[in-house]
Image (cartoon, rainbow, N blue to C red; front, side, top):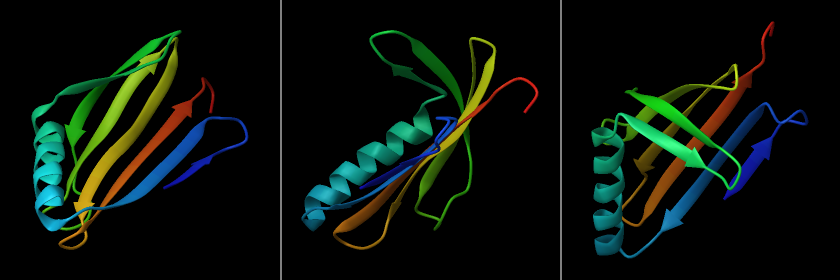
Length: 106
């Protein structure tokens, strides 16, 4: 897994490769894909605050991949990003997430 964040904390990108036995990956990938495709919102919760994102399906990768764009406004700051998953083989899947905070005037 790799996570990158800008110095000012306004952009973050994370990706991860997952390897599992074929049957386990097929089941886990199907559950994750169904969750992404059936949700219209997601909340990121911390001990201090919650940001609720609206989700819009987008195209990312192969036809078997699943991805959503996330949009929210939190304390006057626009926040957007995406979550995507793609199966790369019988035993390997990729997950990707990004967040971008847009301050007023930027």
